[in-house]
Amino acid sequence: MKLNNKIMKYIFAILTLTILLTGCMKESKVEYSYLPCAYGSNFIKMNDSSVMSDGLIPLSLISRWIYSDSVWNNGILQTPSFDTLRVVSAQKSGNETWWFLSDNYILFQKNDTVYKLSLGFVSGAEVSCPEKSKLFFPVTNDTIQNWDELISDYYLTGKAFLVGDTIATGTGNYSGCMEFTQHGFENYARIIKPGIGIVKTIEDDYYNKIKRIRTLVHYRIQ
Image 1 (cartoon, helix red, strand yellow):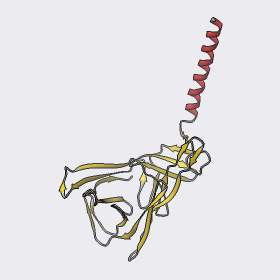
Image 2 (spheres, one colour):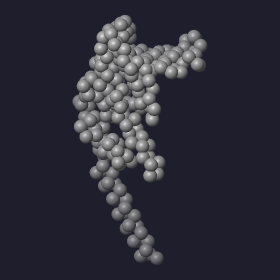
Image 3 (tube, helix red, strand yellow):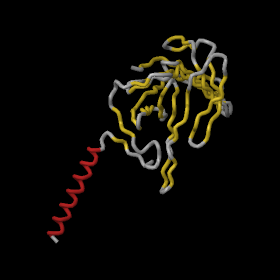
Image 4 (tube, one colour):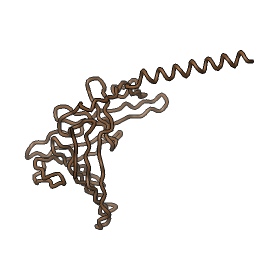
């Protein structure tokens, strides 16, 4: 029995050492269970804060945007607050750098077009792969374009257009902004100033009579 206990302790020690060494070797690699998928099985975590993705929404590991958050309930203004959107991590898959944001969006940017990664799911032997879809894109003068956003396995539809008016924020007044608006039970508009990011959002919940406006008051992108 004593010999068996020694053998068991030896085996346990070897297993523990193996687990620790394996963890160290994979420290920079983020493993997911989406093995047969184009995305999700080979993300490499990036720690270089100097890496930046320029475009409609400048993205880096130090990017953050602070908004004043005002909510009206049945026409009555509630206590205003502040909300911060920031990049929490950056992970590379092939030649593409994906930026993970604090609002759970995962974004990639190329040629002034912003793409979104919708994470799938793994349930037993069933795998729904993460899907890359176009989210924001340049909008030209005097055009209203159809626009949609992939949410899970369905699309929310809306319109994209250039805003004619100047958008007033706590960081300045911006012209040449683009608006991406979803239509439905809740209208949700995101207003983007190229090179800065989202400067204003407007949510209208007509059914519950709630309106929410978030306006940029501070940002850091580099």
